[in-house]
Length: 237
Length: 241
Image 1 (cartoon, rainbow over the protein chains, first blue to last red):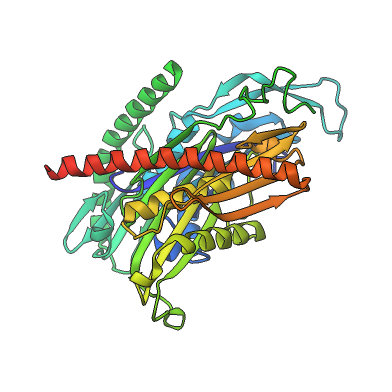
Image 2 (cartoon, one colour):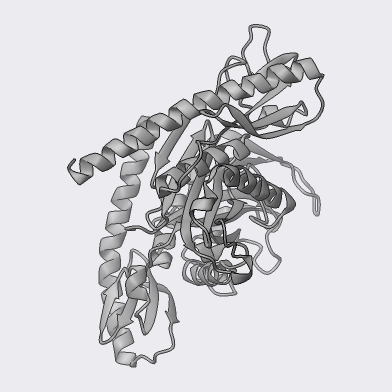
């Protein structure tokens, strides 16, 4: 987005589901800030921002602790209930940072997931009780991940008395507070994060949410058309 | 395992003396003073240069030349198996040091005393030869930043498997356990500035392998020079000259 440049990748590994949710797969989101974006990210400098972004993304895209209400459908990742599930590792890298990282990361993750193909797994029949069943991972067939319900994140930054969408880093340096809202295609809010110390009147927050819903509509449509165009290019080449 | 087939083809279909396809792009990171993306086959690396700027740590300031710092990091998703720790592990620290020493030798540091030049290299996709790709990317990024250089530094790796010297090893060939020679070369001055090898080689074969790597470096240098000329033409055009 503008001069902000992020890369997002999805890797899938077979693992064991957690005992609390035996019918759901697991997703881990990790953001790394590369020093190419900012010299101060070198060494451990970018760790704080990375943690903040990772947690904000997890809050927006995955559900609460019980796993309910996740933007990403975790039950589609299960292979054998209680024994084998897919672990998705979503890794993001911030290459160039010019403000509005959360929105860019959310869009990148949505695009990466729509490009993800989970290989079909054939489970050997006749595995008893506690034994790990044998799995045969097919190299040929892929199941496209369903991304129609994945939310996008829209960040509204309040500077003075106005709020702006998609702030550059110059604009972000002047902000009092920012609200990041993740909205899915149905217009439902999937997560909300408020940053910054200035207090906000509750009516302003409600107004911001409705603005975000309106903007997210445009963003989702634009994103989907870009993703479709990119996939068409990929199929051609 | 057969790394070179009887017809003389390697695992990815190349001839023993053939390099992988190179691709470079200048100015990938708008915010940095200079940046470049460099691809050698499937290995993709991005380099950003910030500088010359004021020294952050006063105690390290040098009164007669510039301080050069470098950091090498690999993205989590760059290798086949997901890496846990992107930076700070021993291999990354060693490669950071190697790149720093190589670039420091060719930057005219005495022209910029009391300043600092930061070179950050990030590996996006690793398929063997990351060290060489990083040095090539750093050279391009430094040129893009307009930092005075003695000469371009180019780098290439070569090895020796199935009794054949091979140029530009990829990951599979590199992990085969045979020798891996990395050479950093200054094309105009015709001098070798970086030389690393692991495993063992008889001396006469080593000379051949090193010479092959130097030829690879010269080929990379030609390509880099073309890219820089093309970039300068673009800049001239945009300025309306």
